[in-house]
Amino acid sequence: MQIYKILSVLLEYPEEELIESLPEIRSILNDSTEIDAAEKVALRKFLDYLVSMPLTELQAYYVRTFDSTPEHSLHLTHHLFGDESDRERGPALIDLGEMFKEYGVTTVTNELPDYLPLLLEFASHLEENEAMVFLSDVNKVLNTLIDNLTKANSPYAAPLSIIESRATLTRLAA
Image 1 (cartoon, rainbow, N blue to C red):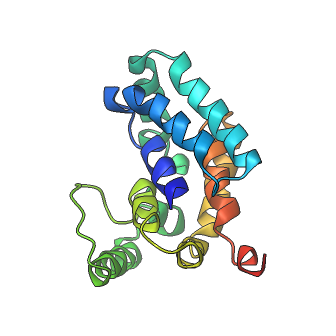
Image 2: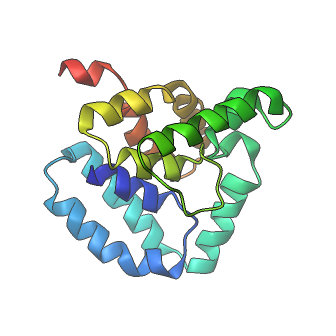
């Protein structure tokens, strides 16, 4: 699903390649029928934010937001277990890695398997309902992360809100 691929790319550390691809992302967004109107508005606003800042400022903000502030971590098991609980976090990371292998996904990153952009990349290869069920497992963590980012007035709360709204089993009934 394109929406998860777009969100995955937008939540990665911003590099020059991302900035160069923003017009293409905007075009895909405009042409997509799987992204609803409210999601398009939120994503356009986020894209506007990305193009409004020099790359070095975006990178510094990203690091301050996600790498230097534990309550904003994009490593989702951190929100469940914290850094101190390797006994609990370790098995969860192993389970995620094993699930990726079962689906034939090999990761070419040095990120842990609970890294949200990696999970979104994985979800982008699933059928819509399957992606919804997969992401629904992390809905509570997404909610906490969005609350933390909203309190910090972070523009990153908007794309995460899109993920959270799609990561609910109530969408299956619609």
